[in-house]
Length: 118
Image (cartoon, rainbow, N blue to C red; front, side, top):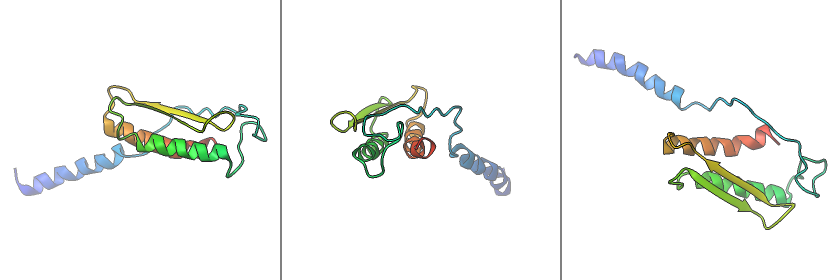
C-alpha cells in the first residue's frame, strides 16, 4: 500500500482519539438539598473556608490521586474526625472499564461535582 494511502487512513483514526477523550456525558445529576450538619446555614450549604470545605477539598484530592493506585477499581477515604465536619467519599469502577478510563472518570468527577452541586 502506498504511503499516501496510509496517511489518508491515519487522519480519521487520529481524530477518533479526540472524541474518545471528551468529557463524559452525565445521564443524571442529583444534588440533594439535605442538612449536612448543624454548622450549615442555610441547610445543604457550607461556609467558605470552613472546616467542612477543607475536609471536602482534602477528600476530593485524595480520591483523585488514588485513582491511579486502586488496582481493584475501589477506594474509600474519610476526611475529618467527626460530625458535622467529616466528609466521606469513595469510588468504584466497573470491572469491564479500563484502569485509565476509571482514573479519568474519577479525576473529572472530583473536579466537576463542586461546580454542579455547590
